Image (tube, rainbow, N blue to C red; front, side):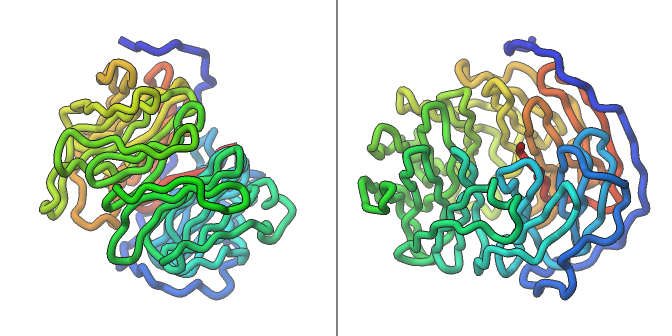
Length: 397
């Protein structure tokens, strides 16, 4: 039974676009930027791309029209690349071995414009600002994504962490910067700086700090190996896991909900733990509870619906819908066959990208991309891609 209010959502045409399979080649995480890759090859679909999606594959990027699901362009780009929304209605940031490159997804032009960042890490969008974290230098870059429209790189503000580490940062409406603390060997917590970048709060009781999410009223949650940190009302507090080792490393927040959806792992010795429970962190009560899915999921499985619904793509091939207030699964959508998470995190596995009332899901095994209407739980369309997709993202508008 659907516990969420329904509204009319324009359906996509149910398309199935076929293409030739491409031969697989080895992943090259440290491949150099290809010469002359500033522009995309000839377009596969004429005209501007509507609500673009971007999927990576081993050797390049597909730009996909979000309405028709047709592949608009195939952009060669060697190496293991990651994609994130830049924060506006036409750009996507592509993380390569050297930094964050700007892709104009509407025109399908991969520009030479790049935010230099050895080991580019998290990209966070909040309150009209986009924040980049360079793991290799610890430099945090904050810019207004609207400035991408004028061409070239925006003149963003920067902050340099005390030491390089795999970190993340978010800037709030009032200008406060919440950023992680750590070194390459050990990550310990968060630091909060005011608009003038003076320290106003910190907490170093968060081993293995990783990931972030913002909830209703700008409550920020940062994951730890034994729970999470909550920044709210100018103070940082610890929310402990019910287990001695209860790691929350990936989160999904919504402005429509005070509850943050997170993953949850309990075995520090596992080569690869395949959890079947998710965490629900209540930023109003400062409490944490767990919800059992009955299936495992991965770090690319978490999302939020337009009303704050929790969405989890399970290895059972279903998209599970969670009522965060009740802490229970209230519905699910059959999408694909069962699948198993690969041991290597860079290898393709199904991914979830949510935009507005539509959930987009990849199926690398069948080289397919699906669109699902979150309100009606109906599949809106499917496209067959030339090669197996890996990461999936798009513009946010």
